Length: 64
Image (cartoon, rainbow, N blue to C red; front, side):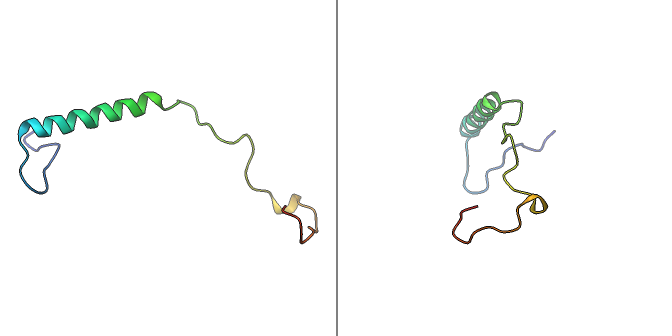
Protein backbone atom coordinates (compact mmCIF):
# COMPACT_ATOMS: atom_id res chain seq x y z
CA UNK A 1 0.00 0.00 0.00
CA UNK A 2 2.66 2.48 -1.06
CA UNK A 3 0.48 4.25 -3.63
CA UNK A 4 -1.09 7.48 -2.34
CA UNK A 5 -4.84 7.98 -2.50
CA UNK A 6 -4.46 11.68 -3.34
CA UNK A 7 -1.94 13.00 -5.83
CA UNK A 8 -0.83 16.61 -6.36
CA UNK A 9 -0.75 17.33 -10.09
CA UNK A 10 0.95 20.72 -10.01
CA UNK A 11 3.17 22.28 -7.39
CA UNK A 12 4.10 20.83 -4.02
CA UNK A 13 1.66 20.21 -1.18
CA UNK A 14 2.85 19.67 2.36
CA UNK A 15 1.43 16.69 4.27
CA UNK A 16 -0.66 19.07 6.41
CA UNK A 17 -2.25 20.58 3.29
CA UNK A 18 -3.10 17.16 1.89
CA UNK A 19 -4.58 16.16 5.26
CA UNK A 20 -6.73 19.33 5.31
CA UNK A 21 -8.05 18.68 1.80
CA UNK A 22 -8.78 15.07 2.70
CA UNK A 23 -10.68 16.13 5.84
CA UNK A 24 -12.81 18.58 3.85
CA UNK A 25 -13.63 16.04 1.15
CA UNK A 26 -14.56 13.37 3.71
CA UNK A 27 -16.75 15.82 5.64
CA UNK A 28 -18.59 16.84 2.47
CA UNK A 29 -19.11 13.23 1.43
CA UNK A 30 -20.48 12.36 4.87
CA UNK A 31 -22.83 15.37 4.84
CA UNK A 32 -24.22 14.51 1.41
CA UNK A 33 -24.85 10.86 2.20
CA UNK A 34 -26.69 11.65 5.45
CA UNK A 35 -29.08 14.15 3.82
CA UNK A 36 -29.94 11.92 0.86
CA UNK A 37 -33.20 10.00 1.43
CA UNK A 38 -33.15 6.24 1.03
CA UNK A 39 -36.17 6.12 -1.25
CA UNK A 40 -36.55 7.74 -4.66
CA UNK A 41 -38.86 10.74 -4.74
CA UNK A 42 -40.22 10.75 -8.24
CA UNK A 43 -43.43 11.85 -9.83
CA UNK A 44 -46.50 9.84 -8.94
CA UNK A 45 -47.28 9.42 -12.63
CA UNK A 46 -45.30 9.57 -15.83
CA UNK A 47 -44.54 12.93 -17.39
CA UNK A 48 -45.29 11.60 -20.86
CA UNK A 49 -48.40 10.24 -22.53
CA UNK A 50 -48.89 7.09 -24.54
CA UNK A 51 -49.91 8.11 -28.03
CA UNK A 52 -52.27 5.18 -28.54
CA UNK A 53 -54.37 6.40 -25.58
CA UNK A 54 -54.65 9.96 -26.83
CA UNK A 55 -57.62 11.38 -28.65
CA UNK A 56 -57.33 11.58 -32.40
CA UNK A 57 -57.29 15.33 -32.84
CA UNK A 58 -56.01 18.24 -30.81
CA UNK A 59 -56.92 21.80 -31.61
CA UNK A 60 -53.94 23.74 -32.95
CA UNK A 61 -54.45 26.50 -30.36
CA UNK A 62 -54.45 24.12 -27.37
CA UNK A 63 -51.43 23.57 -25.14
CA UNK A 64 -51.98 19.85 -24.73
